[in-house]
Image (tube, rainbow, N blue to C red; front, top):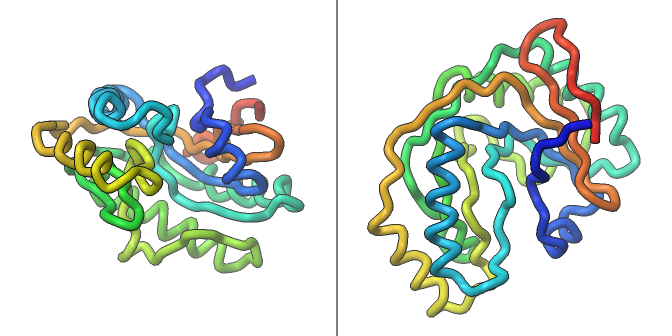
Length: 205
């Protein structure tokens, strides 16, 4: 079983994600530390109960295939085993403005990261899996969402946004050796899939 922390723990978030599946990277090291520092600061400025991820992650794809999870998982695993580990480097602290109101750590467009995203797109183009929120490789902003401020009042959001001004994140970077296939079906389930040809994945949870 995968004993790492769940990516989403807020019951409201999980309910909104029910029936969906995601391919994500979970950076560790300095990237995770920078993310945790920023999230701790901004959540301290936001109202109690503001929605946020439990774990920093970079989403590479989303799906709505509640009846075909095994088939989708196999397709993603096949893609993953042909990939190399992916560099993830923080580029800047940024924000998706209204109506989204999401502070983010913007991730640098390293050729290997963009190439992996594009390769996943090409793989999925040969299938009929229903993808959600997808943009072209040129248009996608690689990022780690810090909190979700869409439901905050204008005044509460202004406080959070002002807190961004004094924060510095530097340029931490790590190489992520695996992706996680995450699906929501009465809770969060995950399978880690190494980004290396011929390796075996961790057991699903």
